[in-house]
Structures are given as C-alpha cells and as structure tokens.
Image (cartoon, rainbow, N blue to C red; front, top):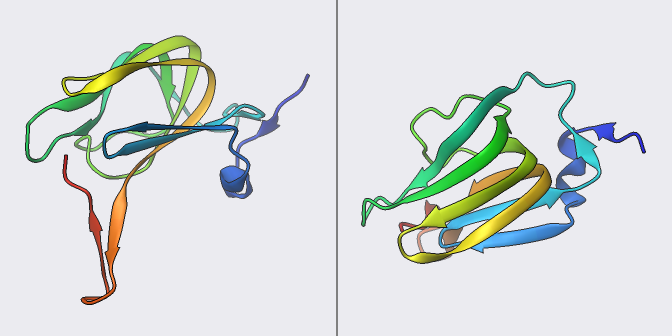
Length: 121
C-alpha cells in the first residue's frame, strides 16, 4: 500500500492519541514523511519538565522531521521506523509502534485573562 505524503490536512486524520503528562502524541498511520528531510536518531528528548527537571525521552529507531531547538514546547513531527519507547520519571512507559507521530504540549485557556498557557510538568 502506498502511503500519501504527510501535510497539514492530515492533522485531523490521526488514528491514536497518547498522553504522557503534559505531552500529547498523535499517530498518523496512513502518512509518510518521504517528502520531508529527516534526521535519524536513536534517542531524543521530546520535552523537559520545567518544574521537576524530568524529561520525556524517546528511544528507538526514530527519524525526526525537524531539529528540536531545546526540547521545548514546539510541535515535533517524527517517524518511528521500527519501535520506540517513551519514558519519564513520573509517567508509565509507552511503546510506540512503526508510524508517523506528532508531539504537541498541552495548553490551557484562561477565559478570565483571555490567555493560553503551556501546562508545566
């Protein structure tokens, strides 16, 4: 089966959602990243806990679609090419199977101040 190149229209077509503290990961099983430059890695820190200093770490056969500046709150598009394990000191381990994923950080809206804030882990 030929998978179509990933684009922004795919954002509503996710198959699974994983929550890992303040990190949310969407899986896009029908997408591929062949049209995007990827950086192969065997481990990457997806986000740091600003309060605790803990980190959401992904280990496995991974290709990241863009440089991760400082493991901040920026969305990260990545492909798990075999299997990967997501760990954190305070959360259960999650095993991610082969596929395309998008990591985003949870935010909250305060209607009284009309502000959107990042959730701090």
